[in-house]
Length: 115
Image 1 (cartoon, rainbow, N blue to C red):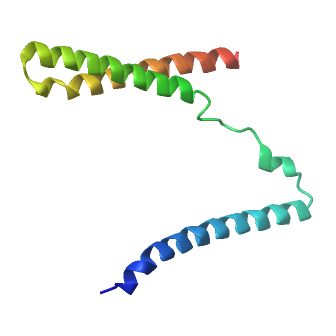
Image 2: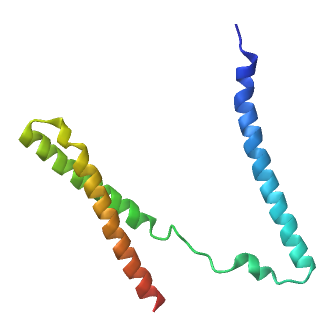
């Protein structure tokens, strides 16, 4: 037996996403046009952008380096102690450690650029 209601779930989901995006973009456009009509400079829309993903390669590289070293340490510990339980903790510890190091390096780079 074909479930007709099951076919409408994906359609309804995409319709909902489209409706939200359309409403957001239309409202933003109307707001901008109203401000321009009042004589406000359009540069307020293109102010200083805070690029949070400027150092995404550094972040991704630090995560992968930490994951790889953690995996290596996990393999060595699992082999030495004959227990697979020692696999996961080094992965998370080294991944977190390298993200902390990445944060410190990124903060130092940003402070250097601001001077």
